[in-house]
Amino acid sequence: MPLSIQNVNVLIHGLFFMTLNPATNFLEIFAPVIPGHHFIGGVRGIRTDLAGKDATGKEVTGKIVDLTQINLTGKRSAGTIDDVPGSVLQFLSSETGVGGIDTGNFLTKFKGKIVLPWPKQFISIRNDTVDKFRYKGTSAIGTKVELASRRKGNAQLGVGVLLRYTLDAASSSDLASVLNLHFYLQPGHPHKIPEVNQDLRAAKPAFTIPDRFDLELDEGTEPDPIDPGGDAGLGTTEEDEKSVDEDIDSPDIKLICANDPPMVMEPQTGTTQPAVSPINCPTFFVG
Image (cartoon, rainbow, N blue to C red; front, side):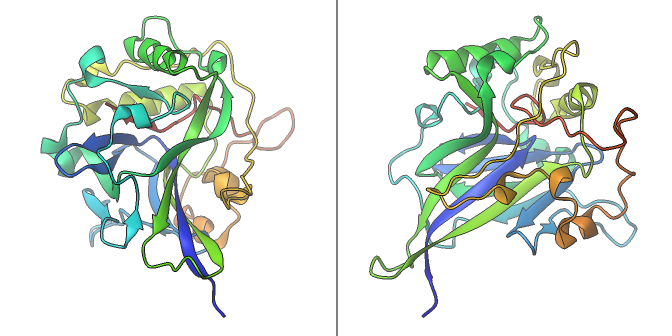
């Protein structure tokens, strides 16, 4: 007898901006245009490049992935930033002056967006202590992110986010199973802090007042990598938490990244050393 899918985890990896659309109570997740990054989605093993290219080889922007019509059940009442735990990097437009996400220029500024019901739960993945979030002291965004985490009583920050749903079509009498659906906005090679700062600068135009998104990380200390883990209780594994460059040997990812530049080798060891931490290309919630 086939398993009935009763729980759905949507895992978000990379430099996305999440926000609540109060008119619909949907969660909208924006993928800004960042050079060298792939906008990828799907189930492990059959993931695809969602942006794609046109007949001239130019990348297509403005892709909309609408998952509000597939019987996903999230929180039934109105969503609020209070639902977002302090372990998810977050800041308010009103406190930082970024002016909000520039949806009026969606086709030119974003590879695409994902639209979902407001989730039952936001869960951060690949966590480390908030003290490891080392940003340049002049950054208003960095200060607000840290304060939001501490104000909500959380000692950790996570590089990625897991959104928890149930599926209306599943019967409670059936044997439960979990579907893990992934979305990435990541390059196919490891990043160090200078490369992350380049990406943060490239993401500025996502906001109506771009220069107010001033987050840059302190380049004086390279953070220790955080290994992917997984949570058996949620139905995730180590593989589910891997970034694109860590999963480069998977056939579906290898195909997507086939034309990427070669991975940079560490001269001391002859191996690649991904720097994956809560401050490297994380997902932000913008209130």
